Length: 335
Image (cartoon, rainbow, N blue to C red; front, top):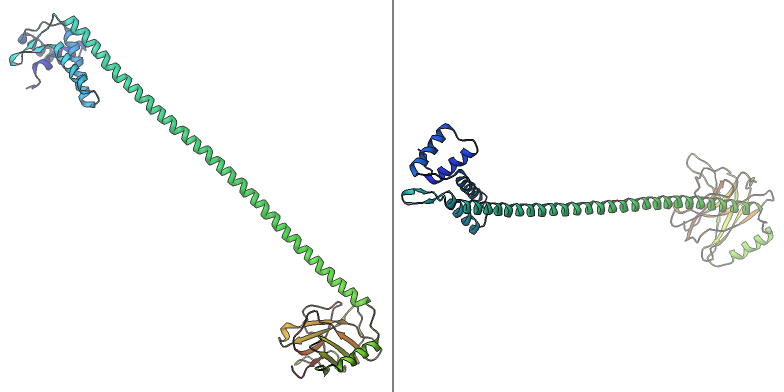
């Protein structure tokens, strides 16, 4: 059994009738309700009421309509459909139909306008928020693009600077190699064309050094190694050296004459630091004049000398001898 109150049911059936949705059973029910309540109201009266009741129910579902407006529309809608009497009877209000219909229409239009305006405003607010968010994202994209472009530019500049630094390093290495080569050539030229010191003057200087206290004198001996004898076994002579003055002389007899364009003799001074710290004492050439006296000219100061040695090297000498062509050696008594 339908438990809807007669008033609401009547309004619902009238609305269905106007919409063309009334079934034969509902029409029979509508006629019965009209006959039961003696209702002769027009369809417009109940249509307006039904519209307001439907709007009333919709506002309850959405929970958006203000309470005072909701109560006013509910009251107006139910008034248009018909007042309630005792025992739930519906009281038609035909005399008030024109005014009620106009009032209900105005109320309905106002409500619709109210919620339409609110909906439009809400839509505008949502649109404005979306536009602001889009503008913010676009700004962030532009900022990121600028940052990325700056980073790429900085990277490009750094790569250019690194390439320039690498090229400068290569240029400096080339210049150093050229300067070193030029120095070697200059030393070779000096060794080849420097005017020899007068042999008599060299002998006098050697004799004077022998008179200085703490000057030592050591005889040459072949620079032999196991299974590798010296290149010139018959060389004689000695070394005169003073550690305090860092001065000395070499004396040779029987040293083979050399071609300065092919090879030269080189002096090596070895102090207490050992063979790994050999210091060049200069290069010289041998002549056929018999006795040869050569000054010792170390490139740097040396400590307490332990060994003097003579090797054959390429013109101009070398920084590190391989000891393949050994001639004579003179270990000191302190060595």
